[in-house]
Amino acid sequence: MVDAAHPDAIVTDPPYGETSLDWDVWVEGWLADAARATSNLWCFGSFRMFMEHVAEFRAAGWKLAQDTVWEKHNGSGFHADRFKRVHEFAVQFYRGEWGALHNEPPTTPDAIKRVVRTKTRPTQMGAIDKAPFTSVDGGDRLMRSVIRLRSMHGKAINETEKPVKLAQLYVASSVPVGGTVVDLFAGSCSTGVAARQLGRRAVLFEKRESQCEKAANRLEAETEQPLDFDFGGAA
Image (cartoon, rainbow, N blue to C red):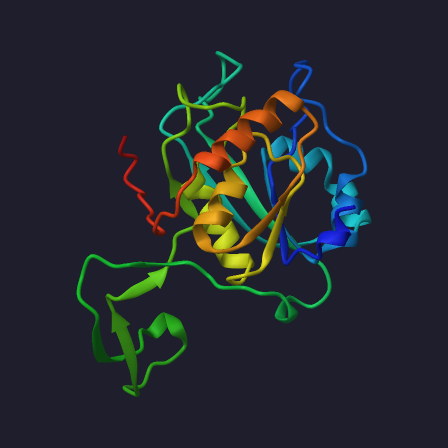
């Protein structure tokens, strides 16, 4: 069923399987299903989750591409004798050749004006002569791998809802305009909303009927909005 959608990528937030809650149960076999559908996967998770299921990722042929960190404004630590956890990972995996995938790394403008300078290389770069090179200061830069965004605490319709602005990053970087993204654990439909705002198609799967109804209502109420990122943790 998933492969029939011919998605450019899967962006999904599976149950981590770290608690005894009835909705937090790891789904066996989903990584193999995902591998039959696409070669590009963005998966949310905790470090514990990825460590416990690394063999399943490998068995399905998934190779690690990169990892990013979502830093929340608050956390939900379950232990009083450890650091308060205020982050989650979003990790990209791929199959086949990396160059065959759609990949558009997100950029963000620097606070300073773009300036092109001629400099000499520092000695730690292995060059001790005075041969000049061109350095571009300011302008667009690759986005940092640690992304600061407020969580959906107090506003979520799903227990582990991700901000739409966060989902936009992964959809925009891995799915071309007009392309298709699949979310196997759609929950509150953040991936679907992000896809609609970015001009992509979305195929969403969610087994809980109550979540499907809420997600459908959310999509119906959604209107086109410009791509707008806020990394300052503002309300």
